[in-house]
Image 1 (cartoon, rainbow, N blue to C red):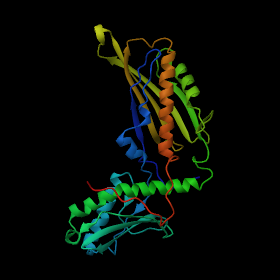
Image 2 (image 1 turned 90 degrees about the horizontal axis):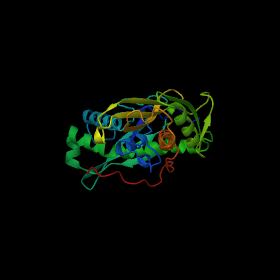
Image 3 (image 1 turned 120 degrees about the vertical axis):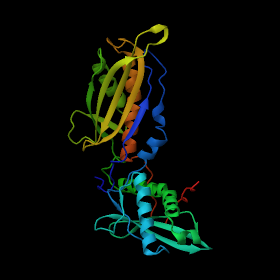
Length: 317
């Protein structure tokens, strides 16, 4: 299995979905794009701990070099990477920072190092005027760190993907095993209808269902809650329905939750759900697949070998 280097605690993505719960309908597909915030969370598979030591080759005095290390740590934490501003500890991955002078400007340089001290990937930050760099203000160092942090997160994502690619047991090379615990809280035959519809919808080449939680990669369980809603057209009584499809990893940590929200005519779901269950379950199955894909990193591109060209860091603007 993939080593514990990559923690998934910061990749919980929640998806909101408004599914029209009535009859035979053209159901929208918002899961095809979870939105900017969910994309940011899902694409940030950080190491279990990334040490950020004070850089000795920073072209700064020791105090300002320490400020740079702290700024980089904050920027990575904001991206979901559990970075720690501390000397390198045995067994930790770490970020080697340095700076070089060229043409009256300073170029910050970053290298992700393995616990064995081997270079795994490099990234340059945007050049900064030499005078501004030497002054080492918090504003300048914070700005530089935040500019390059997304590129470093992308690098860590690629590192995990490369490890998965070389692991024959990872989800890049086999289907995810899913244990579905069922549905609770639905009126009418919703618990049964939603469960059956989901079981029929979730199977695909990337995912298989099993009857036990033992050795499952993910567990899915669903809750339904009904509550009063404002009256609809012609003063018709309404109810608000919330269906949440929870996805948990083997440790019980929530990998994501696909949430379906809608207002329906009061008590219209007190009997048979019929095609309403099919529509909701099909959309939920797509959401569960995407949560698993994002959380596991099975669709991420592996990082090229060290030394291969990487795209430039995004502009601070």
